[in-house]
Length: 310
Ligand code: BDR
Ligand code: CA
Image (cartoon, rainbow, N blue to C red; front, side):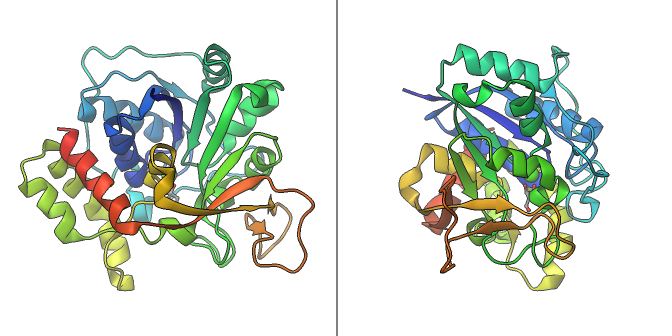
């Protein structure tokens, strides 16, 4: 039996790759996608997500969400994801595209009710859309089975010394989601930083004749130009982690933790404070935190998914 999934993305190079993985995994049944402001402005992340229907040969419904974080100015990441969010690669929209005008939160609520408590929500961008949906529909929390989040870190950050990008971009939204009472799977930098695709691996995927392999090479040029000078071996596949966890939890090690998102700190804004390594514990456990993975098996799933998507 396949698992009903909604994925909220800020496409985004690694979001695009995660969508290829999502599409390829037979365990997952994609109900719809939605876009949020994050790696690029909403106009770009919404368009890029719709253009993945061209890349994949699919016609998944794509809904737009928030144009800016709840309280703060938008932050984007053009140095990693390009000005358009997709490494400045232009992909045509499907000629027969159907546009879905409903805001993401209304469509998500209707789908969650339809799925009677079985819908899994994967979120790989800032949590603005998810927070708006949970706030507008107070019973949505009872209809969502799990929210799987790429975000946060139990140690340092990638955007500040304390915070990971998705949490830092909208800390108030993240705080609402972690407090909502829906079971949460948090996939932090601790594990996502270690899922790296190397240039040899992405070039081999294209050389194998996979049409999406060439797309992969094209979109990875921009993040590789950013990461290579730091001496990294490749580009991190952050956003594929919650997707693969949902289909194959047996490939990961997790711990139950109390997690709170810092919204007031100056140096610690957006930090996901966990009680995993503390003598003092919170009096709640609100998240399953993914801490380790069978890295080779996870990478194999990503590379096979890209080969399959052609
Ligand atoms: C996260 O931030 C974005 O740049 C990536 O798409 C990923 O979701 C990693 O911190
Ligand atoms: Ca993302």
